[in-house]
Length: 271
Image: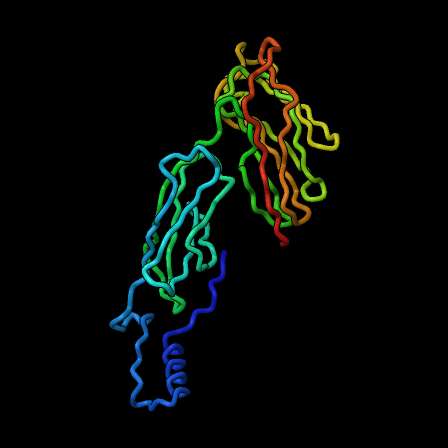
């Protein structure tokens, strides 16, 4: 949800013009209203936004930059990503969006006059983020915005992992900001019929050992959710959850190659 700035109605613009004209010593009979923000006026220019720069088809990084221009100097702008709410109105003509997860995105930006007249069809640009390399373990989503009292859900995901049977890891976080509630196994390690074993400890972080008790001899290969964690939000802060891998093993107790590890960041707002 966002709140738009107070917008001045055209009638007030006309009244202000009238008062300014009188203050200059002119006669009301000489006054000719010329309001370019009045859609009934001859000089009116409809709000229109043109995107000047946006990502190419596929981004190999997690940050996207955009710039745009409007059809009139008095325009304000609001933008969004996918189905999020539009931002608050701003005079800025550029934006940088970071901590983007893998996937397809649609960026939209629209313009509007202070009178309340808005562009009906926003300008848009589509792109894809493909920034996580194969043989990675990561927390998802990359960025979370929540309020005190909410429950955070964070997934540990495998991305292009080969031959995994046992994973020993811990999550590091500020326990004065978030507190662990529960963990539940995802479908990835059990997708080939294995039965899962989960051992949890708190030392003081969330330390987890998850593995396949009986399953495929070659371990599990591919991409998917290994385990989902839930946290209780107890205080406002900007912080992160770090993922620390103790070991990743295959069916013969051989090490599984992990090329990249990524945690998550979050902003907790006061409720």
